[in-house]
Image (cartoon, rainbow, N blue to C red; front, side, top):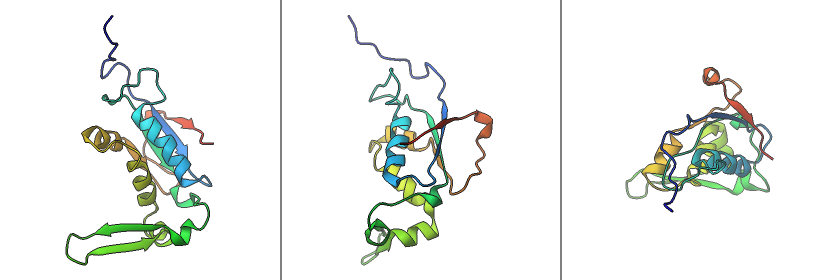
Length: 143
């Protein structure tokens, strides 16, 4: 009996909306990563992109547990010698709150072309408004 391989475009991808307001950053990120990878579907295949589109709202109001607001570091490098820049989570949230969520979700996806394709289906917004209402998204609750 041959192994079942689902067709790449067997069903159209759904759209899910996650309201991150008041939720913990990591818990929202894991839920989004599972939806992007398609692990919630019975036809999940690790080497195929069977995931759905995810819209995350109210990222500016996401919670960080413990003392992460003051202790967690976000690093970036310019590519030049001595070009390492570090910012605390409090500063990153004030400057660009979407970046915190994008980085958290990206770290949970595969590090390959397939992971890049999954990441492109993630849309993150700091407020309530988003331009994807025409896709009739379903609201996804995070614990």
